Image 1 (cartoon, rainbow, N blue to C red):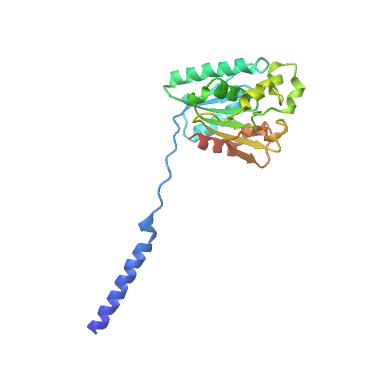
Image 2: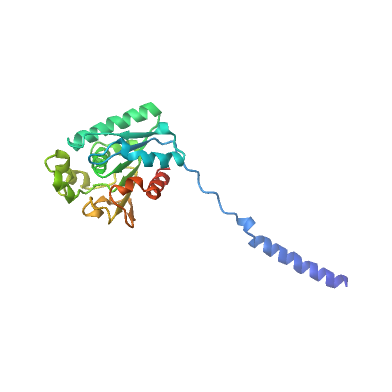
Length: 230
C-alpha cells in the first residue's frame, strides 16, 4: 500500500511540476510601454484654415493625456508664399520650445499645411527640432485642385510639378531622425490624386473613406495620431 501511495504521489508531483512549467503565471505578458505625452504639439492648418480647425484634435489629445498648455496652433497667410509661411513656422516652433523648455515638438498638419511643414523640416532643417510629423490629407506632392486658385502664390506652389513641390520632394522625403506618418483617403475629393499625401519612408495609412474636411473631426484617426506622437 505504501508502495502504491508512493507511486501516486510521484506521478502527481511530476504532473504538478510539468503543469507549473506550462502555467501562464510563469510567463506573464509584459506590460505595454507607457505613453509619453510631454512633447508639445504644433498644429498647422491648411489653405484658408485657422486655429479653429483643431478643436476636435485638441480635445482628443487632452483626452489622451496632453495638457492644454502643450497644444499650439500655428496660423499663417493662406494667400501669400509658403516659403515665408515655413519660416514663420520655424520661429513659432522656436518660441514653443523656449516657452515649454522642450527640446523638440511634434507637428500635426492638414492639407496645404503639409507643404509648409515639409519645407520647414527639409529645406530649413527643422527636422532637428521635430520628433514626430503627422500629415493628415497633406498636399505633400501637390493637388490639381489648386488650379482653382492659381492667382495666389500658395496655390501655384501647391500645384503638382511646381518648383516648390520639386524642392521638397527631391531626394529624401523624410529627412533626419523625425518619425513620419500620413493619413489619406480615396474619398478626399480635394487632394488629387489622393495618394499625393504619401511620403517615402513614412508610415502611410490609407483610411477607407473620409472627406478632406471630415478628417479634422475624425476622432478615430485623431486618436491614432495621438498614440503615434506618444
